[in-house]
Length: 343
Ligand SMILES: Nc1ccn([C@@H]2O[C@H](COP(=O)(O)OP(=O)(O)OC[C@H](O)CO)[C@@H](O)[C@H]2O)c(=O)n1
Image (cartoon, rainbow, N blue to C red; front, top):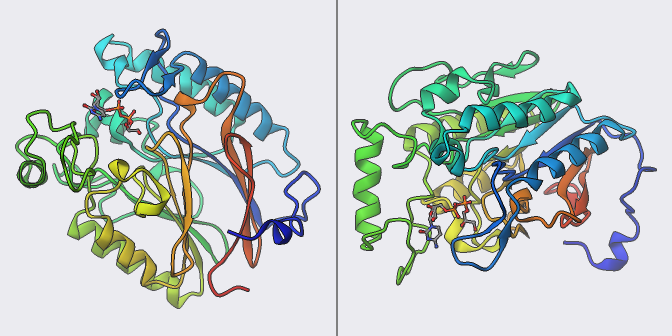
């Protein structure tokens, strides 16, 4: 992060110079038409109903920006798992879609654990939450449309020459969202049992590696190879790549309980490609930020669900030749983020 004196040279406001493009970022809306309640550890309030109002506020602000975002990056957990309990998954999703699509701009959806509490992968692939089919400059992943039990949901696209967004599937290797008969479910359960002896696999009690809980997941070797190939091509083409997944991949950007199971491998892959400039995640509702030793910026966005009604938690990213500027709202601070090797 830049020292305060340096930051003053880059004020973040409506007067900023024209960027190549901008996009909106929002995480963990977790809407449900139920009363407020505490999180599992009883430390934070969750505002299930009000999350829809905060989404409405974000949409209105994005619509009135001088540079209207070219797309929105929705970092996962759009509706809460309680909807499944109350049989309101479809209705809640419809309500959230009504708000989010008022902007008439493409929305790129990441899938988080709450997507899998509400829907099967097949249902997600057939819904508007599958944004890999958006028209434009999209390049689909080889797994696109695949109906294999082990298919993953990852894709990339270029919003502007020399820039690329790569959306990855943090629950590729997981026990949630995977059919119990699938190879990935069987292997994930075996790993979870090895790493987490607690009867309740959502509990991190007494674990040395607290990330090995059921509400997390990891990236398979097949997906990691595919990510590697995409990034190799971007390196060759001198692109700047922003990667996004539901689960954080750097221990200093989050509470370690929220990390991707095999984050060391994923991190090493991202750091080994000079094209990678940033990694966006949600899941940890407290948010976080860290620039790693390779210069990759790790941005974990605060969750809307735990944001008090009088505040906000979303941002707009302005893309320039040498930097990205995050214009944050509410709990999200402004940041000027120079690309690695650009200073
Ligand atoms: N220490 C914990 C935390 C959670 N659980 C149970 O796991 C399930 C998922 O938890 P939930 O808090 O709903 O998941 P979120 O994605 O909203 O948040 C993830 C991190 O907690 C954010 O910091 C649910 O069934 C919980 O009851 C648990 O058993 N033990």
